[in-house]
Image 1 (cartoon, rainbow, N blue to C red):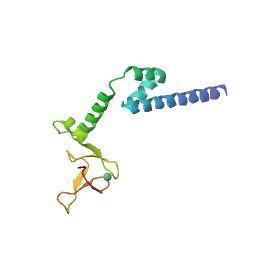
Image 2: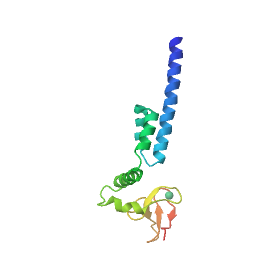
Image 3: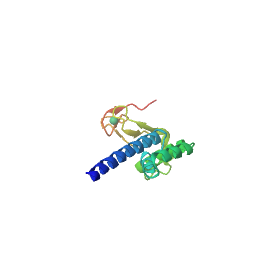
Image 4: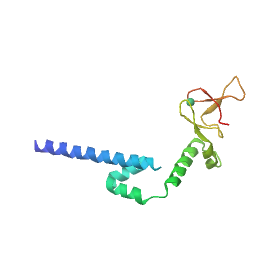
Length: 131
Ligand SMILES: [Zn+2]
């Protein structure tokens, strides 16, 4: 009986601990950081320590965001000579929010009946390129 009570208490505390780790990972994500990485940092170093880390490692948010964008674009365009040049052209389908890129043609395809009309490869709805 005592063992069962102990394990219930331990599991409850572990659940609360995970809850705080998750909360911290959300804060990290909202400030442009990797949610997964900060979740594990919180798990290993406790959420309080990770929260202090989060506030000490201040000014690199934008660099991290830029790095994330670059990584994402490099994954989509492994052969592109200069993936960073595609970042300003990153966009989302206005209908389904799928990522699209007018510069590289990622996520868009021509509509067969027309030479200049394009549509989203996900939802197949025509997209008007922003003027
Ligand atoms: Zn779409």
